[in-house]
Length: 340
Image 1 (cartoon, one colour):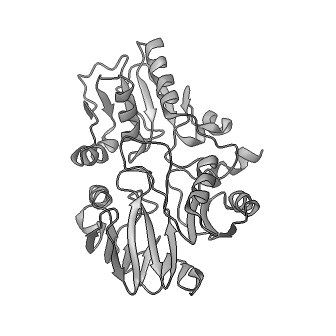
Image 2: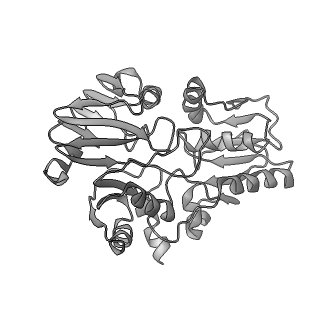
């Protein structure tokens, strides 16, 4: 049986499956791309052919427009298998955002799973992560340091609602990413009993409508209007965005990087919420063990600590050092803050 490194190779464009003739989440325009999820650091425009879940393709269309999303778009349901150049391929949920998927491949007796971005914490807005037994597991390491242990998301939501109750005359403006974090936070607020409108910066509305169109209930959401009464309201906006209509705004930041004190301070947030759509240190290590892989390839994040931890458990590690990822949570930006 050929070792996976003979047929799955990191190239400048991205991770390339040679017998299948396709790239996974390529950072440059290619002929054939398999896309794990619709964040712009993984799903770029202009590929000639794109394979992804139905939800990911819908989000890509909403982000890029029909033509820029790709020349030929092919949807693949979770668990549905196809053959490409002798490679058996299927997608399984990654638990990251709506439509996010792991890419499982079998070729000449070996199985490789490319996780994309993922988390293990339950999320009401996307299908939960499903571990896949494999020989080689390709994992992200965005939060691949022992200091990153995310609190329960319900705890952070409760902190936000407690602040709203404490400051009823202020508008809570929450900085969050337009795809995934925004919709997850809305769903968490609804589960916590917040049934008032959640107002959205226009940049966040399109992705939220795609979620609703795919059966994810978000309740009363809509863009800000001059007539809205915003005292005591919750407004979601891209991080750092100005919201001129907000009344005496209380700035909130929702990110896994709020664990880092310097990052929280730099955000200017009065209320930093530790809420991430990526696996934390414990989840990364548990997931590697759950796959039963004898080898782990690590990319875009804190590669060395995760490889070292896996090695202590007898799992061979390799740093792929793929470039071009990290639009949502970039560990390189915070590196000096953590080690200082």
